[in-house]
Length: 326
Image (cartoon, rainbow, N blue to C red; front, side):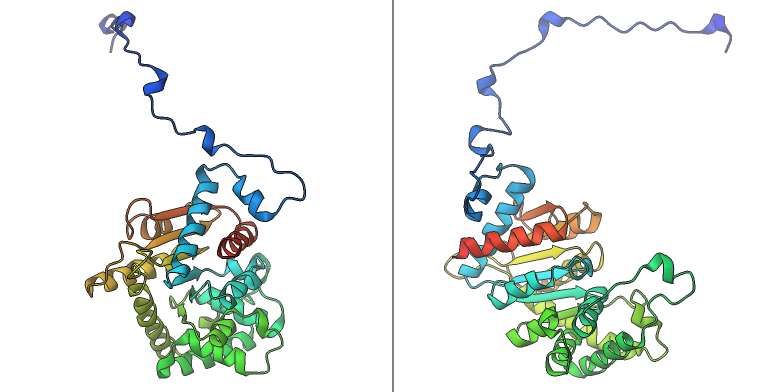
């Protein structure tokens, strides 16, 4: 285009005198005095400190999750703790086990990683490796003890009890030095459902030459049907109206997908889940937990997102729940 063809543009003049204003008293506000944080004195109780948090954003979501869990247990409704391997890897096993032993968590569900790290911590007192180093020489994940025990659990689980129950019983009944740190052993002692949802090819034990895909598939399929039954029972109690709670902690893909399918199965079979509450605990907002846990499956206001590190959030959550339950 030649310079002579350039078009001159001048925006219209606005009539500023026509701007419409309103009184501040007529405006809806997102922050009011009742939501402000307080400053408790040194040496205060945990309850006083927790109440002093500002009632906004993450603190409000955490409070609402605590309230939902407390209401669920008082109404004898299930509380499901679905987790990824990082819950174990960040040192939170004892916190979850305590909630199982107190009867607050009534079912466990995890992916293959969660089961593997739980097993290794119970048997060895240590878990996890530096992947960036061991992947260079092909030694990543190549430990025979973990593979042998997980394959034994898969074979037993394929007989009908499922992978999670088989693993828990193996750890609880065997000469395992740190079984008190195993979530699956704790579930076996408590007699609550514990399920493992395996995506074949995602776990280190699948690299072992003796890995039995048929046994793993049958065992984890049994667990899927178990967790569907658990989810179907998350509806409201007959008298209180409170529903159960599904907590997704540190699983960005597998457990949100499993939960969504279990919700569909439950509703397809006629179970009313409108009173269900869900919560997602993680360091980042991921697509699947956001959509498949806290938005799609539940009524508005029944899904809660709590951002932060497990090693900080889970101790806070535990203390707040046990204080509220007395």
